Length: 446
Image 1 (cartoon, rainbow, N blue to C red):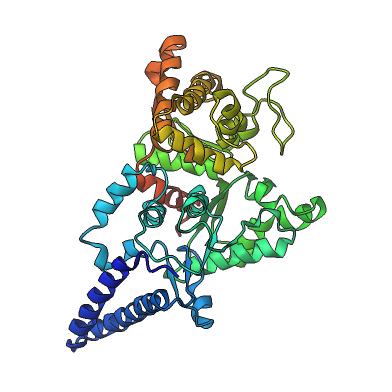
Image 2 (image 1 turned 90 degrees about the horizontal axis):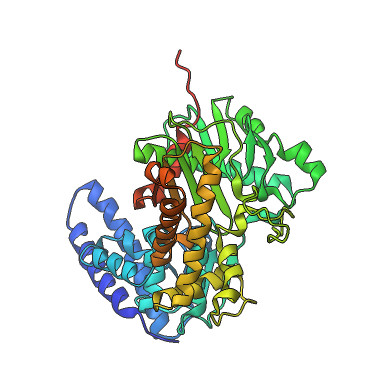
């Protein structure tokens, strides 16, 4: 087994050894508690180093897996993204964030995942016997898997992952999952006065109307068990104010909070297209703004969406599906049999290398966007267009914005003066949606 990537682990192990010795000399109860934690971390580091040097098996995992399972099975393990959380990283963490940015990992994914990918690419962490990860909750998690799959040192290790529950047919599976998340959150609060959340799909008065998360549930069970799932949960929580809305709307609301302004249309170009809107008063409305399946291209031969069956939907123009459709026309030598996420990664690699064929894909998507903005402006008052998602990663995202602006300035000059196109800052990407969702319920004071 390879011992590559042990230098950092040994450096951190030695630092924790000194920390334990220092903490153990203190009589403070707080420092004694900290010493217990430091000893546990030291033991974990030492065990991984021993396994790597003696060719014994150990596991690497992502940040969201349950460590208690590994502990219960007495498995040596570490998490790929653990380094940023440890005090030993302080001398060099900012340099490594810059290194991750410089390698083409865009700032539209959280720093945690960017550093995890960069740790793999830089050979900074030991190569495990197996990797256990997740395919959710975001596109960044999938990109971590792609980084492992293409890395010459990691590509041959077994990978196991928990799939998102899109095709789970049992309503109780979904109900228990949501219950568990609420209980875990409540455990950190003195009391629960209200609950706010968001999810992909259409929600009306907390009723689930259309949602891809429940696509595996039969129509009969959907009507009887899923439609009122959040209303039933509200009853379980003593009918505290409870609000669930579309995730795109919450993204727009988070943008309005961040920008301190209203009339925000948020558009995320990822696996699909997520769109939401916050009005002039910085409120989300009762209008359905799930625009992924709203027509944009009215040609008879416009591309057909595989899920809805509709022609010319926005999802075909503002997501990784758009990138995949444009690859053959660009002439890039990319195998179209690859999954769409993998195709996007390949395009991004060509873009990083300065290949104009990749740039042409982003210029085309930017032109699509430039003509879509006036179409959306017929229905929405837009002062800010907030763009997110993995398609917006890196220089390609900049090209999309540049060419969208060029179309507006050439074809719709008045609109160009009134609409600001931007991408969010790191804080909004990481925390804004959760903060905005928590603000949704109205709490009535006695």
